[in-house]
Length: 76
Image (tube, rainbow, N blue to C red):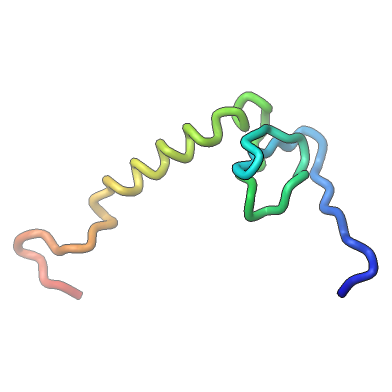
């Protein structure tokens, strides 16, 4: 066990969204597993969950990422 806890300090102007506390923070305050970012502005960090939902929807409907081969294709 370490005697001193190393605190990660972000760069000025880096914004994160903590999914655990559901809040925007400047610099990484919470652990990496609980945050999204960095974002270039507070506004973008505030919309992190919306952006994540949009990206997930795009990924889920991307025809290049399907589990079943389409007609005429052979499975790998």
